[in-house]
Each structure stands twice: as C-alpha cells, then as structure tokens.
Image 1 (cartoon, rainbow, N blue to C red):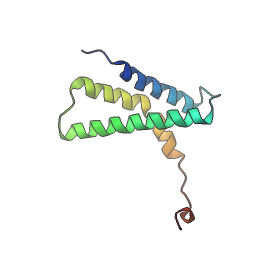
Image 2 (spheres, helix red, strand yellow):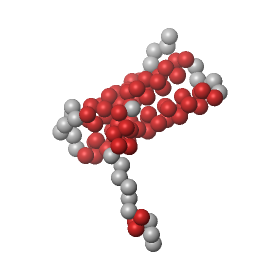
Image 3 (tube, one colour):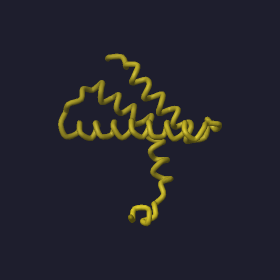
Image 4 (cartoon, rainbow, N blue to C red):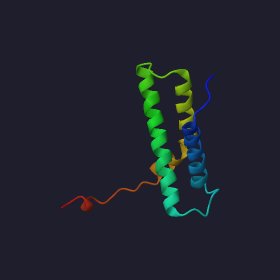
Length: 97
C-alpha cells in the first residue's frame, strides 16, 4: 500500500478545517476565511465525486487513487451541503437589462 502524498493530506486538512468552521467549532473566523474554506472544500468534494462517478463507467483509477478520492469526499462533504442549504434565489430583475 502506497503512502499518501502531501497534497492528499492538504485536501483532507482543508476539509476538516472547513467542516469545523461550518459547524461553529472555530467561531471567531473572518467571513473571507469561511467562504474560502467553503469554496475550496466544495471544489475538492465535487472533483472527487466526479472522478469516482467516471470511474464507475470506465476503470481508469487504481485502488489507491479511488481510496484517496473517497477520503476526500468524506472529509469535504459538510461544507458543500451547508452551501447548498443556504443558497437563496436571486430576483429575476438582476438579469434583465
């Protein structure tokens, strides 16, 4: 079994910090930091889900890569759920010229 690379650990740490910020454990964070970690976690999660879904149709990932993408999804799933539940609809007048 191969060891994880530093980038793999970085993605998991970003997800854990993003989850802690969203859950309110790290409560005194500036809004910019909260948004940054939320967006970063969401992008990592969506990219991992996309690659795992594509792997179901054509086997191009080895088991180590698939395992890492599963860890990324698990560590980064809470911030995208929070973002989706707090989206608001925009008024249609913003899109009218």
